[in-house]
Image 1 (tube, rainbow, N blue to C red):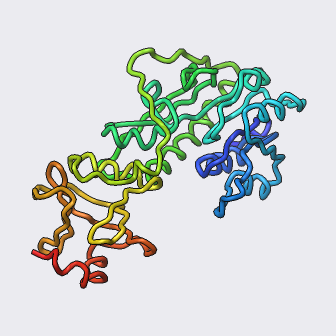
Image 2 (image 1 turned 120 degrees about the vertical axis):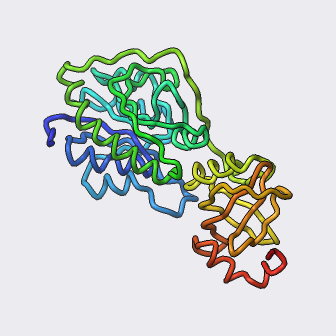
Image 3 (image 1 turned 180 degrees about the vertical axis):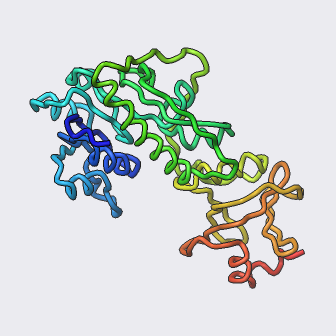
Amino acid sequence: MNNKNISVVFFGTGPVAAASLRNIAEHFSVELVITKPKPSHHRGDWPVEELSRKLGLDVGLCETAKQVEAAIVSKKLKSRVGIIIDFGLIVTKATIDSFDLGIINSHFSLLPRWRGADPISFSILGGEPETGVSLMKIVPKMDEGPLLAQRKISLKDKINSRQLTGELIDLSNQMLLEFLPKYLNGSLDPADQSTEGASYSRKLTKSDGKIDWAKPAETIEREIRAYYQWPRSRTTINQLELIITDAELCQQTGQPGQLKIVEGNLIIFCGQKSLKINRLQPAGKKNMLASEFIRGYENKLNNLRT
């Protein structure tokens, strides 16, 4: 579906924003992209700016909400609506009011569940049976705006944050193609969010990734999946720094944090039950199967065999 007659302004910075922008630019006319500038200490890709330049889109670099406001208010934009995804800045009321139909946010949860900074990770951490995408009009309060549309997906038992992010990007892209034209032509009216069942996710920190083996195995297994992209679940065993990337529950019990090799399986005991480690990444090495780790670090693991 091509809606090149529909002009939008896009606000976004991170990799989710870049994946969304690629789809939006294919189907709509992107008048302007507003993104945060690349920090001087950042050595990796800066996806939205790089994609925008590649596509020949007009780009505005803004570090603060006031700079965003100045960039939008100073331009004579024809777009009646903005789209904001994975931006990293809270926009001001003046910025929102610069568009006849406001700014639409594609939020990766079933609002009012998991408002806030990291709904994907917290949906996994909370053991949710389902999540989804909510298209919402931005208001000055945190993720409390009226909803244009909402769709659900089931959370697979073993899904991690990277996999879930990919599924939600695809769903968001489909929903924007379907519902944005309806909103712009007046055939879709936003509906107020429910006031019941609201919950809030926070921004994760690096310290969240340090595994506390005194927690139940079920909790740690969810953390490993939720923190798969960042901050990653880290531990130190036998002076080996490890990132755990895949694990499953098992019934063995023992001293929390103790690692054992049992019948060729790598087992770490938790506060309740234990985890069989399927994949992990030693410091400075690639992500590998537990069996590869056991072979490669045999000298350091001999005392752990049973």
